[in-house]
Amino acid sequence: MFRLIKRWFRKSRTVNNEPINKVSLIVIILIDIFILINVFTGLADISSWYMSPSLTYPCYSEWQNYQDQTTKEKDYEFIRQTLLYQQGDRSSLQRDYQVSGRGRLGNVSPTCLKYAGYKDKINNPQNQQIIKTLDQQQTEIDRLLQANANIRAQYDSTLLEKMANQPENQSINQVASDKAKQQLDQNNQKIATFEKEIAKAKQEVVTKPESVSFIAFLQDSAVFSEVASGYSKAWFWYPSIQFAFQALFLLPLIFIALLVHKFAQSKQYGTLSLISWHLLVIFLVPLLLKVLEFLQVGLIFQFLQNIFQVLFGGLLFLISYVYILLIPVLGFVIIQFFQRVVFNPKIQSANRLQNSSCINCAKRIRNHDIHCPHCGHNQYAECGNCHNSTYKGLSFCRHCGHSQDTL
Image 1: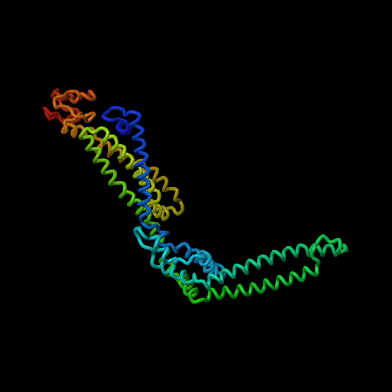
Image 2: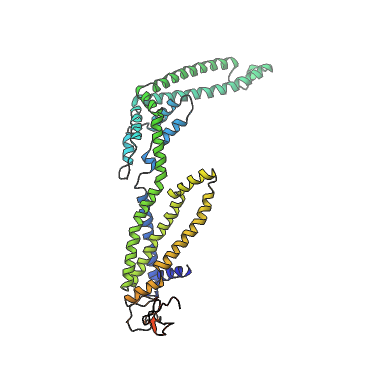
């Protein structure tokens, strides 16, 4: 592992096995930052390409709130909130739902489009005017109630003064008890009148044909269950779909950077090899982060969560133990793969020997060179069986064919 990290740092800061200068280092850092910003921007764009559950089922949250309400006037309150939300805006909610899905993969739920159609029918000038009048009347009721509260406070003080036989001309109150009682009665009559008018207007709003149709649609439990089920499934699959699109964005970049790096190494293009190596690392780091993120919220996590809920009930913290054990094992497998397959010294030595390159620095050398003129590395080793000179790093002696691994 340490050798792998050391090799990564060496390849990241050298060109043709020579340290890069300060100007080149600054340029490479700026390139890295620019590419990294664009990689994460591309990841954000492609992850939002597929429609989220909230866009696919935009009516779910409002509908769920209606289902959860238990108040007596919940039908009126729901219609009122609809009219207040769309007050002064004559645009179609159904069209807004459709526009939100343009340029994305997926479709808005037909049920939610139907839901929006009902709301558009309710949002008409007559209903808007009724709601506006109701709000004005309720404001006037609140004003009268506040006035009554002030009068009662003064009226109570006046009674105390009368009980103490205080002369009227010495009263600190501006409202006499008789006038206060008269004003209270007038205000209460106005409040009662407004309340009757409000109750009548509320009933009028709820009993309109478009409102009756909408409320019947909202109360259809079978239709709502279908929307709720679709929304739940969408949230279950959404992290996995996002990860798939993000991997689809990164894998071609990783593949191209790897090919360019291999080509640059074989042709001894030091600068191109360095830049392609940096790009390869830049593309691999976000992929690793997205893999770790997927393990926390994706399909695998949901699968483990369901299993642990069945086996251990609410002890979901045990999933953390699984990850604590699983991730190091996964890391060990990845390290072994890169050590034995990707960065296997014997495989690299064989490939470099076939390309007439130094088995250490991979630069071109002549076939009869014993030491590399670029790095000084000895290309040969003594066979432990026949004691002849054979290629270093290969499994068998070129003279006697004896295995070098067993020596």
